[in-house]
Length: 241
View 1 (cartoon, rainbow, N blue to C red):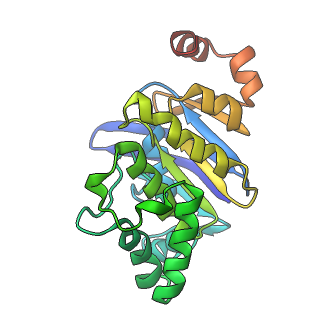
View 2: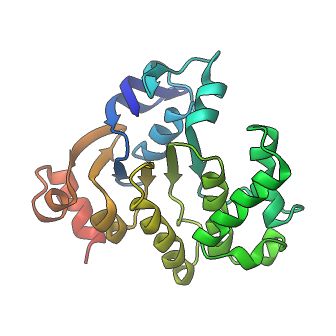
């Protein structure tokens, strides 16, 4: 579903991604871990051309992304959940969820609302449909953001550290929703996270990045029992207890 081929990314003189090659299979749950500043978020943002690679190629479901076709391909295939919730504060939860399906996917109001209520049920917040985002906790807002991504009904959902802006008490409620999604075979998930319990329990494959490169990849069992790279072992020893 996703293929990065020899992707490099510079911000000015800063070489952020260095010859990144990565494939994500249909239905796969891929988790990207690594220290801050290692290029994890930039890698994910290159997948939907929120950041355009300086060089290299990005393919989504066999189609190479270009500036001419990126809007159509990304809109048809991918949704994204960000670190910040990016909800419209002046719109109710229901309007936040129905806006894109009506404007971009040409659904009727009734169809969009049916979708919205269904996915609000999935994230456990159906009763918040008429509430405005600022009235919700951070965890609730992020669950609404996940419901919004689901309303697009895309095959791929990208998660860029979706719990990093949350209080420790609300992190688990978001992770519980993501675990539920991970059991959906028709959804391909790419998740940048520092939540090692989630990575261990949900990932089909884990990729470790450092200094803009993929250092090691493998199953959760491999990573948490016998990683080969010393940089990986050092990282895990500091955050896994």
